[in-house]
Image (cartoon, rainbow, N blue to C red; front, side, top):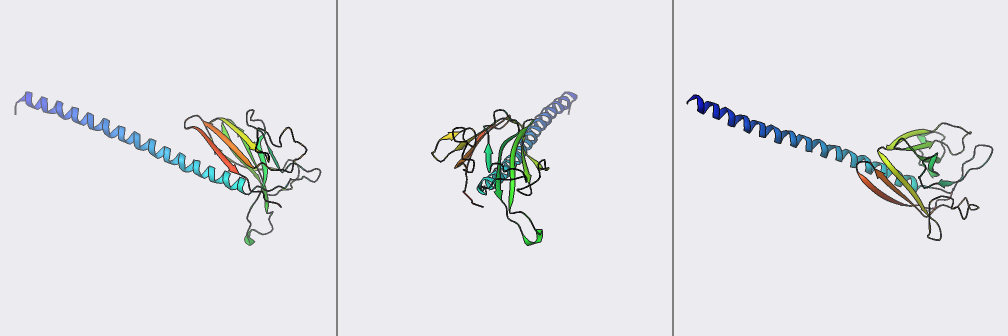
Amino acid sequence: MTLLELVVAIAVFSLVAAASYAGLNQGLIIQDKLREQRRFWQHFETVFNLAHSDFEQVVDLAPGNGIQKGLAFTGQDGATGDGHLIEFTRSIHTTFREGPASPFQRVAYSLSDGGLYRKTWSRLDLPYGAEAAEALLLDGIEDIRFRYLDSTNKWTTRWPPPLNPENPAALPKVVEITVELDVHGSFRWLFHLTYGRA
């Protein structure tokens, strides 16, 4: 083997090795992206199931703080993001091992710094200013909108409906949530409320 043949062989080997490395590196990048997408969709499904459970267990029961009664269900469209986007009472399942526990729970969804948070109060009637347990559901939210279907099958962006504020005990028939994520695009959820009576 001459020196020229050796140089050519080394050059060919270098090209093949570089191409193989580039292909392997690209495959690892694709694998990481697929793994990240799978984690996102698993988490997204978990969030959806939690929201579905919340709205499925909504009850027409207003909270009180010992001074005055609140509203069983309140909501805005989410355009401003001030305060709670939506707040309601839901029933929960308790076991004997948990001891004395309230069968109802107050739940609220709020938006802060592009994150959708779920707040819960362990009891329905709590003193004013009681602390809530808070958990981040989704981040990277660019926009979120809520709509509510009333008993006349008309959509409204606030609940109670502005034209019927004297009926605070009524629950919407359907809650629609539209979420715009910065990476994964837009999603629309529809939740049918069951009219549980406490």
